[in-house]
Image (cartoon, rainbow, N blue to C red; front, side, top):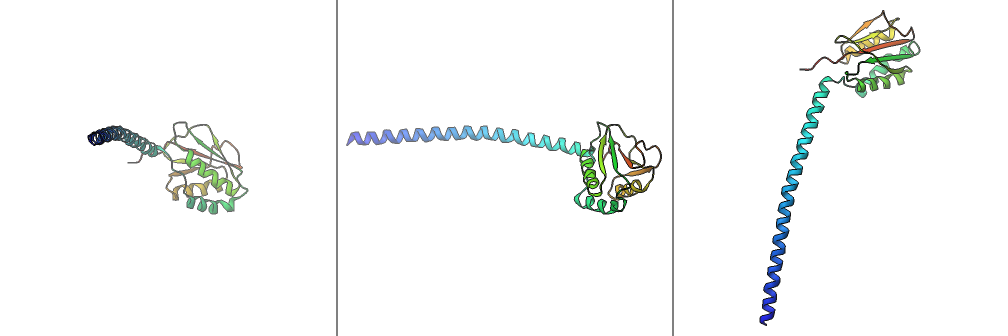
Length: 173
């Protein structure tokens, strides 16, 4: 009987130590997990800060609604312009805007191509020798919140094309 009581006490002690070890392991895991969570939160905050900074400089894409509006507005010009050359410098963030212009172009039968180069000023400059599509583009850019001007001289690619020069985006306050 004494032996059973001693065995029971020993078993209880072992179980208690095992629980204590387990609790300690969980406490260590909680601390380590907390450090990892804290580190991940810092990384997310840094990424959000970088994204916010980049967004200040990036020309935003057209919305789906704007793409639809632009497509309807440019549809009557189908066939008058075959190519839209979109030009921006390496330090200008315009890829998303360019991609949305490609969607518009595809819908109205205009091949929208990226051409190397640069653009000065603080407005998107549309160059179009015949003025029709270019004028419509300038109106659409301005209506959509992108400052733009029309240039009817100096277009380099001919009468079946229009050129869109995208400068660095004016800084947002």
